[in-house]
Length: 509
Image (cartoon, rainbow, N blue to C red; front, top):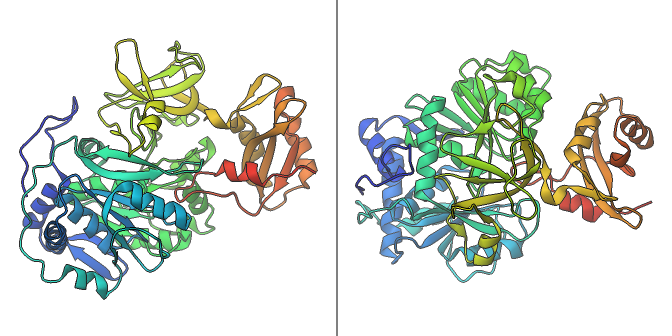
């Protein structure tokens, strides 16, 4: 398959497709490892040939460009090959999360319009009107059959859908976020700034269903590096041992993973000197934790702030700006980020407001949900389209963005705005607190009142003593009305605290 160079967003190289780049690497370095997991490996020539077989089979079944397939399961070599084979056939890929209900999963398969549903043995049976193919057994090879040769060439355009990411965030019903090829190309082009190249070894420990993972995997593949997939549930000790073994150069992790890794007692024993760059996104990344990673883990540290929907991205190169660890950085080059008030009016720098963003990397919209798409959009006076984040923040004097909270998580008590992140930061300052989340609960007197859920560490005091300690350090309007210890905070697949679940679980008294 070949594509002519096409216009790309301003400031980027001429558009190329990732399947084309995979083909080039297969020709240039056929025996070099492309994807590894455990003792299994696909070289570039093997990955390219398998992607071809998949594309041939999909086309033979009548799948047309801009239609879709769905994939659900644990990270695996067939998962990566299916993703690339679908793209090579001109299809969009819907990588679906495994941690959902059966009803939600069935709804996502239907909503995606998938012609086929690929899953492994960990995925329960779901009632969907399309064929389901096991991708982790001999059934996959049987499905491929005698597919061989090269698929029919497809002239992929930047605006065509690349994937449909289902992101329910911390609310309920998943929404399909359609991301175009041009958006992925923007991520690949940005990868050059962070050392992605033919000698990259990207260690992947987050799910391929997540945009968090894909913004690391595809730059590594597009630049001809090697992607190493971890196996099973995330285990900090195994991760560190594997990073040392494969001489990892790049990693994308979520904050809770960094927290667990830095807490490993013999962390310093592992040789991590091969790392060039580590990335973090998807959830709040505390300044204290960033500082610890910088101090003890070789290589740079970059935090991305943005949404799966795209729009504006902020980048904090923490190794360059250690005095700005309390921020999420400055807008990326070519990204326009502004703040608006509740009436949609733009606010000047220094004011607190909702973050909206615009860039060359934006979703097309929510799949089959034009109403939700319109709710997520904001237009400036010149008619330029921005994506609303739902986050509240303000810019400091140097143009670095400081986040307060999700707008929907803000607690309004007695007419005062309370930002849970402020209260959580105070709680985490106690040596007996490992983690904390604050939510607003109904109050007859104040409308809402803040309640804390805390994961204890060694030496934690009684819950009431900790609440008193925190309230002595909080403002009068911020004080906690209750504090509960929990074994762990409920989190999504990519580490976001599910505050909705905490609110629903709370019972006074």
